[in-house]
Image 1 (cartoon, one colour):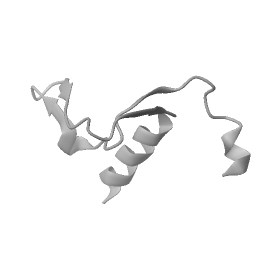
Image 2 (image 1 turned 30 degrees about the vertical axis):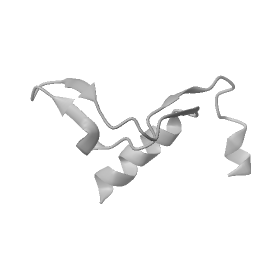
Image 3 (image 1 turned 180 degrees about the horizontal axis):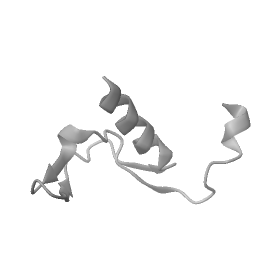
Image 4 (image 1 turned 180 degrees about the vertical axis):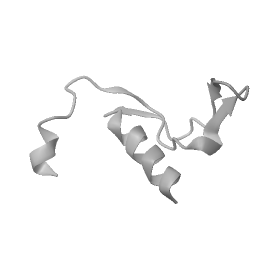
Length: 58
């Protein structure tokens, strides 16, 4: 992990914190909203992508 840390962005981004398909709203064609922002924070946006990937595989 320490080896990969050097690739993280230097500017923090808004991170959802609980990003998965259950927190996405759609009109059957496109995402129209994201709900449940209680775990939101500033940090590395890869945190949300890793969470989405995790929940998509389970």
